[in-house]
Length: 230
Length: 175
Image (cartoon, rainbow over all chains, first blue to last red; front, side, top):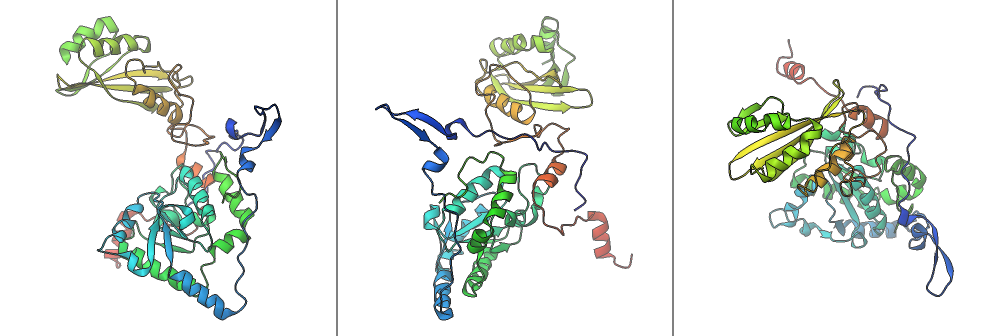
């Protein structure tokens, strides 16, 4: 790309105030007590994610990785147009279930997040929430050129251009859109990575947590959730 | 359509009629006459359906153009009513009491163009964007490419080829 265009200067000073219902405040209970309420702290654990240590014996770790590789449970969270390519995989024609890949309805039940196409800033916020709620070991696949370098949304005012700046990506599947066969190949590739112990995205996220948070907060101006919500 | 225009022209100070097809035409009306015209079109002439309300940014002229596209189903005709607003203090008239759907369009115009519609329900709330801090993005002085370069992380190495030159070099490498 060309150098950054400086003739137009974006507004860097304005901030978005926290929504009123999320601000800390004092309330009086029915029996007359005064209590302090902080909605962003009261309902969430504040502990940052931790790096998951490897097993002491390599052979045990290899066994774990073999087991992890054979249970890829995908969070059914479709962003952008790529989600339409995941549907045929659930049908008898492509049948991803024979590889131990299946789709789950909630983040708590899944360990693979597929970002299936462009992510607007609004969706990025939900994707971060979903990713942080998933239980480790967890993996992220970026699907399509939009997650790699912006794709056709390279000059959009509201979509991110590079997913791995905001979430740890273990594998990209290129294409616009990649066919279901490409997705199957991608799942096989991810399995190889997991078995080789190279799909360490969740640990990378925990190690570089501050960097990821700074990048996320630089684009999500109305940050109205705790720093780590799980 | 021409009969209708001739009928309304003097009473509503309409501009010249701009036909597009036999059953589609556009007309410009001064902002203060808009409500009277729309009400008469809806109640007397059968234009009961507001198809859309949209805006055009005429930045060089310092104007916003609102287009109320109205449809008469029984008569199979569509009329676009245009209003010009001052771009610096863009305030349109709230029409949600004529068509409730206008409120949604007006919220969108407030967010994307910064045209205010005082009195329209929830017009100051966010519509699609969340936490937007810059110029309304559909304004033409908002540079989308520059904004995205200054805001979003970029992967180096992306190149753009001129299709003509690229295919020429592929197909005829000798020149």
